[in-house]
Image 1 (cartoon, one colour):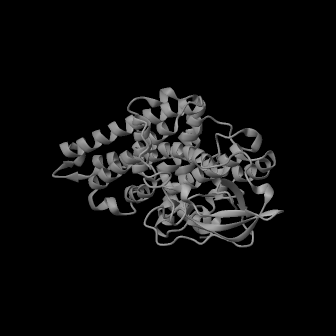
Image 2 (cartoon, rainbow, N blue to C red; image 1 turned 45 degrees about the vertical axis):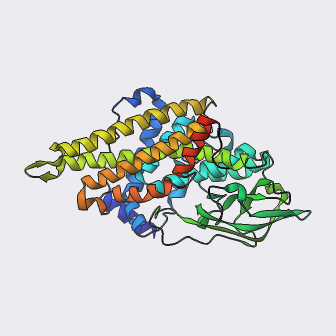
Length: 405
């Protein structure tokens, strides 16, 4: 889509996004002025640049590539990473707030930012060499480069330890073979952080760059979910990887799982944003839609739906706020993050479904964001650990018994 067409879309739909965030328990009182300022800035950007175009791109199943640079400019890529590498140097609560504002618009937009910041930049920062940090992080933070994360394989999703993607030492380089799938950002990524096994079966992280011979990224088509996000595969056919592209700071599954914890944290905030948008849409519609001589918001069943939505949203707001405090102190555990991801995606899905019913037939149209949120959340409830896997993570924490084996 040309820049002129995008400008026309923005002009035609400017001002239609009237979102007002629910804050029944005065969560804002727990935020700093800087956090609220950043939230306001991101919210303004979403209303000005994203909301007017997102429905078009979702309907067309097209990724709005031009927003990558914009997301870099507003500091959405790796905002919690240090300033010295061109990142935001912010706290985890602020990072969560940014993810919430992006997913309030669309889960695919937040996915683009989550993958870039938590699954590409974070492992390079956490496990990379100083040279790797200085080479990759500034360009990823600015949006000049787009990155992706290769862990899931065609036959290994919830069991990443079974991966078959592998590399062998060829003396002056590594030779990488295998495939990854369901990879957000893959079709347009300049850089991929890929997890593969060496000859001894030990998992390592490798940085693979666009243009390396034998590396391809086929696009995944026919998605009913995350339609404004680009999804694809990573295929490695005897790809020569320079030895300096191995992440030196970690071995084993601890590497990718540490990255997933960071991403899951962002999802717990982001999914809540989608729930808040569905609730806000339902409230506004309930006050305006007249049936039997009065607004449908005056009927008991509709009030019940709205009251339950607001209650669950408020509980979820308090959950992620507290989790953000624990993240900033370095005290958050993987099981605490799992609880927040599982709970908040679940309440977002339930909120979307109830809101869709309140809007009746209008709820399935592109005139409102609810059906798009609902379809997107069907992916969010699966990726970065399925709903059931997160239940088992919590179960193991509670009982000390591992149900995975």
